[in-house]
Amino acid sequence: MKYFIFLLVGSLSFHLYADNRAVKIQGTTNQEQRVALVIGNNNYQGVLSKLSNPINDAKSIKNILEKRGFQVIYREDTTKREMRSSLNQFYMTIKKGGVGMFYFSGHGIEVDGQNYLIPIDAKITAKSDTEFEAIALNKVTKRMQNIGNRLNIVVLDACRNDPFSRSIGVGGLAKAEPIGMFVSYSTGAGSVSSDGRAGGNGLFTESLIKYMGQELDLRDVFQKTREDVYLKSNKKQFPAIYDQTIRGRFYFTPPSSSSEAKYIEPVAPRQPTIEKRVNYSEENRQRSKPVIHSDYPVNNIPRKRTYVEEEKPEKYFHPREDYSSVVGYD
Image (cartoon, rainbow, N blue to C red; front, side, top):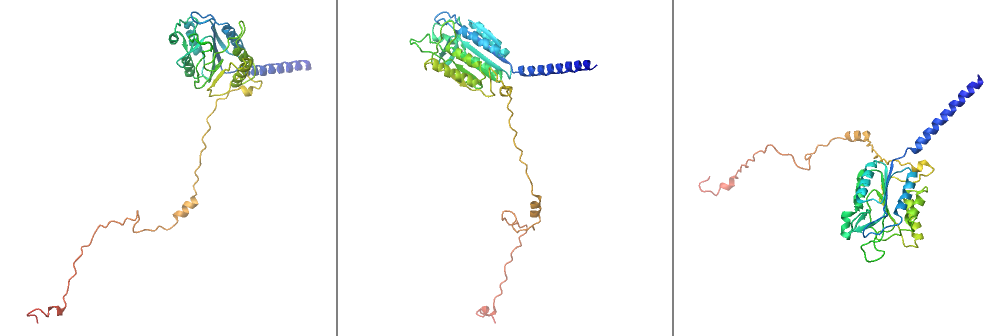
């Protein structure tokens, strides 16, 4: 009998432990939605030169994002139609309150202050064709903003040589600072980045993957990536960071302490209520004072008279001596 009771208690404790463990695992995996669109374009046609590493970079980014809980939409060597379709799928998948990330590696061109991401089938014979043959970056960021999720991240390794410039080393992208977003380029605005050695990763993406795997805040990931790239390129490549985020922190790799990685929606502080206290004793004391009625109670204006007595002329009586000189007066 004792042996049976011992087995019963042991089985109950095991089930309780299993239930608690299941609750803990479920709690740690209950995170906000993470969605990413990753595109790598190598095989360009026409005047645009073929690139060596964008697809390698895109694959590496895809792999680390999937390990960090992202739902990844991955594309290689996309045409204009495929890029638009992938972007629309990305917009539809982002959920309010979640995190969206767009990574593009390939050719990018700045035209009149606007940035364009170029698909592999773009028929660009002059720089003025870019507006009609490429994807405008500001339209992508605008759509991401309008979705209203908590955080959007845009990473562009697209700062290559401008094929329409006669000078070597001229190109790059213009600044992009949309409100509520975190944007990073592989090098500074107006500069050109290195494509890296063939068959590997570009310098920027290689460093970025390294720090995405560490327990660092979003800003620290890109700050350390910038420092790493700047030193390894002999101070020739300086990644650009445009931080316009508003709400909360973000970790690609959450810290071991779950309390640091948890995002709490900020609540506006309540306005303090000011209680008006009335001193009734003072009010009663003032009421007990005698009331003085003045002849001119309001603004020293005398009261209006309703009746004015008519003034009568005084009757003059002449003294007797005044008539003595009158003839015939006795």
